Structures are given as structure tokens and as C-alpha cells.
Length: 504
Image (cartoon, rainbow, N blue to C red; front, side, top):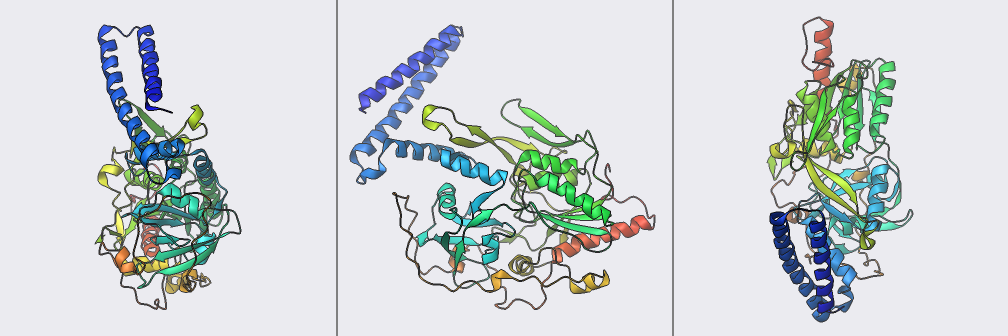
């Protein structure tokens, strides 16, 4: 299509828009303002069309200059330039995203984000190929099937990592505790994880469960396991939100509703202009249990809604880690994602089935705290652990495992969990996977990279090459002890405890 024809189409579009304005009777002044706005947009559209036409006519690799490819890339760049959370999904990507948030999909079982330009694992889902292979939260994926990932987009990375059940993907990974890159061959499988991991009694009165995401059934699962543990005598619960990267806003609200009295504000949603929406508890709390909420630097978004709500009402004690790191420095705060993304289906002929995930609001805790402005929640108490100890809990898969002396005194004997990370697969050179269509080329990267090159920010851990004989969940221990102390005070009628009951 020639530039003149495109220009004609744009002019016709603006003329139709102007006619609509006149029919609406906006008045002379408003119409003049609208005309000026249209003229500005026409000038900007001219520039866009000229750049696109020049690329089509002159760029050396002709297969990259198809109009649909150029427009899609332009849209992606426009949206990604807004913030790190806004995304344009093609029809295929929109389906994959919906499958993941609604439950079952095929892939590895990890959630990823970009950190310092590197593809970073922010969550490894329980009982998935990634967990079985030994991939950990915080690992950075340097290569996928022999192709470097520096500069890759999240959408393109997801395409490469997902795939049909039974197919394999080769990953090279940088891990803080290692001096060399690790190589993993991971076989994809159907991913249909439970939101709740390891619900159990720590002793005869304190329960524990780990909530790994806020997918559609998470709040229902949470309620079911709370009721089951209450039947076993649970009077207090440790709700573990570590490495929980978030999920659906409505599910986070429903989770809070299990603990907060009817009628109380859970979270406030504030968009552009005067768009304000309050989410309020609509039911009576489930039971009268004490509550401690465990968080870390990967507790984000919906996790922060729950933790912030519990903290504001003093409904729970929020327990963090003195060993959490951010930008190479100790920082116990949560992730700090206090914005809301809305899924907006696109309906035009060219975009039918596509979708925008667009930041449309910030959320505020009941005390009007903005998680984004605070850059994360500060826990009420901190487990006294070093960065090495903090990291080794994850490395050795010890979430939910109390020290042996505590378990023995409580009459509990737990099997030693097998640590899949102890035996990473040997490194073997792999040929790049065959490509069926042109792919974006990420930035070139040296072949002799080491983890110390990847983690340049100074947060390099200094774990011993051999893990300690006994690694346990010291952060859980801090939460457990706080609840046990509260129970003793209550039993001794020592007065009201701030984290004790609903409604305080």
C-alpha cells in the first residue's frame, strides 16, 4: 500500500471523527479543540507511517518487514514503554495467559520476570517439572535451547519455555551459590498445581500451609484446609506467602474475607480521575485462630494485599527475614507491586482475540498505604538469619521444616525431603533448536559468563559448596515462636494480644 493511500485512509478516519463530534453538539470551542487534537494526531500518524514505509522499502531482511509484524512490534513497544507490568498479548498469548491463571496448562511450572535485563525465576510451582529438575526461585535463565536470553521479551521467553507435554527444553542457569552455570534438560508436562502446598499441623495447636499463588481456586482451597486443620485442633496458623508472586485481585480479596470481620475495608482501588472502588469483607471470619503471615522479597501484588490488610487491622503478625536482599543490600520489605492490571479484550478486526494487560489503578491498604510508594511492606518482626541462611532454605527445599529439636518436643517426626537441587544434570553442549519462522535476536552475550558476571549488583551469596548437615526453616521458626508465645499468654489470661483475634 502506497504512502498516499495510507494518508488518504487516515484523513478519511479523522474526517469521520470530526463529523461525529459535530453531531454530538460539542460546541464551537470544544470542536476547535478537537480539531487541533486531530491535527496533532495526524502529524504523529504521518511520522509513524513514514517510518513503517521506509522500513518496508529499505530494510535488508525483507521477511522482518511484513506490515503485520511491524505493527505488532510497534504495539508491543508502545505498551512495554508504559511500565514493566503492562503487556500486549496476541491471540495465542492471550489464550496461554488465561490458561495459566485459570488452572491447567502445559509447560515447566515456573513464573518469570525480568531483573536487571535477565530472565529471572520468581516462582517455581510445587510438584512440577521445574521443581523436580531443581530450578529455584532467584535463578537466572541465561540460555534457552542454546539461544541467549539477554534482552529477550517476557512474551517471547514464555513462548520458548511452554510447549506440548513430553517435549524437552534445555536451559543454562546462573545461580548465586554456584561458580559456574548449570545446565538442565527439563521435560514439559501438564501443569495443574494446587494453590496450597503442605497443609499440616506443626504441633497439636499450630497449623501451617504455603499459598503459592492466587489462582482462581486459591481462596476456596485456603478455606477448606483451614477447616480441616481446625478439626485437628488448630488454634493458630502460619500462612506462608513467601515467593508468592500474586494472581487475581478478587481471589486476594476473598482470602482476606476469611479473616476480617464483615463490613471492613480490605483494599481500595484507585484509578484515573475519581475512579475509586472499595472491596469490603462480606462474610464472617472462618474460626477464631491466631495468624502469622510469612513474607519475603518475592511476596508481591496479591500477597501484599493480604499481608497489608492483616497488618493494618493487627489481625496477624507479619514475619519477614533479616536475610532478604534487594539491590545487593539487606532489605526485609516485600516486592512492592502495588498496581492493578486490568485485562482488556480487543475487538477490532485486526486484533480480535488479542488482549491488553494494562495498569489501570493503584491499590491502597485499609490505612491508605500505597505499596508502590512504599516500595514494599515492612514486616512486624524479622527472623534473625543471614543472607546465606535465607537463601539456603530455598536451595535445600526446606520451606515448612522446623528444627529437629522443635519437632521432637512437639512429637512430630518428618521425613527428610529430597533436594532435587543437589544433583543438577551434567552440562552438555546442545545444538540450538530448529526454528520454523524468523525469531527476534536477543543481545549477543559472551560464552564464558559465570554467575558472578550475572549477579554483578553485589548480592553474591557465599554459601559453602556442601550444604550444612542440618538446614531448616528458621523463618518459619520465628513465626511459630510468636504464635506459641501468644497462645501461652492467652492461656495464662495475661491480657489481650494484638495479633490474637478477628476484630482487633
